[in-house]
Image (cartoon, rainbow, N blue to C red; front, side, top):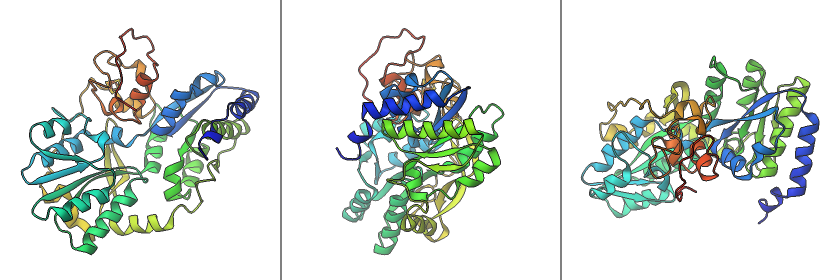
Length: 374
Ligand code: SF4
């Protein structure tokens, strides 16, 4: 398949690996920001092929994983209400809230539907004018534009029985928070290529300057990731710290202006809570004043729900790169894809699920079960 198989070529991968091995002279720790990159790294064993001096730290870029527990609880509350049709992408249905998940709400009679686009939810709202239709709008800069467009369309078409439960987050403030952590070991970043395809690269020079770290915009296929690592390591060895675009076949420096215009119209920047991490200033979006009537939190009066994260799950440390999944005591024992304690074991982009799916069991001797993830 064009643009996929040609970026999985084993001979080219070996050449990139040889270059990385020849370049490295001392230890470096790089963070791949996106959960999709983490899955590609673990699936293809890229981390095991690198020189021992290069450590890959898994970052927080999994949208399902960082959605805070209290937002899941708000979704569960709204989805349980009579007259509501609650629409979501499928991976959110298994994410555990405080005491149940959306699948359980559905089994108890709630009208919870899996959709493939927010526009599907808007169509359902048009077809059911006597019902309230809510779409669960989570994710990073990649999923925010279509959700913004859907709210824009709802307003334009006068569809008042549609609303959005919003939990959108932004990558650059998360990088800033990681770098400000006293325990941070990250020396360079592989930025999420798909996020940069929307937002461009303008937000990164400030971060490279302030924290003296290279940021390499990186894709998702094995050659993309190896090239991102190669460029990051080369900068580190030279003492450089610039923004470098290694995903130029997709990312333009200015991003996608139409998507950015839509985001600026429908959303406004706000502080957001990240699951297991806490509140990061200016790290997310909420509906702007002009579109506030489409905010499900206000429509269903669930703004007061606040939930503490359970102590047993250490996904906050996993998401900050402070802990490898197989270093969590629950990994593969009480926490598996069938019995997840945290979202990082549920999501198809979660680091815990990647380690489980690709058998990175570490010291655990737990028997494997067939994994529904992936
Ligand atoms: S293995 Fe399970 S309990 Fe441990 S951090 Fe991952 S999701 Fe949480």
